[in-house]
Image (cartoon, rainbow, N blue to C red; front, side, top):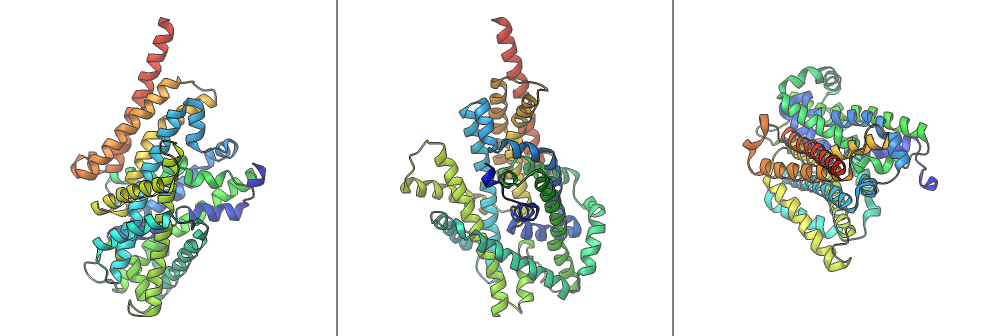
Length: 427
């Protein structure tokens, strides 16, 4: 493994930041900021806080090396590995849907209708996911860097540097605008997801040494704090400058501001800046589909073949399109799918850590039962909250999903462990 551990502090920090700095980060934060101002940065701030919290588990992941579903599967059985993998696959559906929504609203600024754009993007994601283009990911990241520089320029052009400074001071007081259940649901699901998701873990295990590992995580957290306030500050500055048209959808604000920076949608620079957002959407969307397809094929249920790849990619794209058509806030959509994975996996993961550190050993059956019941509860609650918005407790889908999944998962752990202990004593 030592030959793969080449990441120094700067390289690790850059990869950790790039793992979350995308269209959901940009457009979702801007959408929230249109009505909540500085409080719209809750989601990216939560990512930064999660990155700091990751320091607690960073050494464990670095030493363990393997993916979370792999070491859980080795400890508790293949069925656990498959179910954790399925929950990870499920969480990616939300990310896929967000890319479809983001791409459609970017194209809307250019005059394209939303519904046909969503269908076209889902189709493109599926087609591109079947092509060997993963090595071109640096292009997508470079375009996001271009947009970052454009937003910084836009902030200066809108005389918004004071707004950026004020946002850092007003962020905590502005959180009073958010209902407490939504505040807890979004922040907690995001922070916990950062701790147990493979998105960060895959880079953490490549750190050169422990010093690079800790310094890289800290630097990434600082950079994320800096970036978190950028989209919301640009929107606030645009509102103060009066350049946003009345009735604009929050998802359109960043594409519209970029077009304004470039002189309008009828100008080459304006069109280039907007299209440079669409291309990363294609890259992320197709990459997510590629990971989903690989995850399903890795289960060995279907033989690996081009027809099966096409079938699985099509089904995955349809799931993502279905969720995208349902609509809703980008951040709430991301957090809801984050919450499903967290609600299903958190209790078994904690049980594994307790056993590994010698604090308490739960039976294999209890952990399996916890994972099954927690997963079923979280998925059922997610589907209900997507279809029936009034199902959410206190009006927060994310909090409802976590309460149901973690609550029933913990109950399953206790019942399973009690049953195992009673059976051993009885025999």
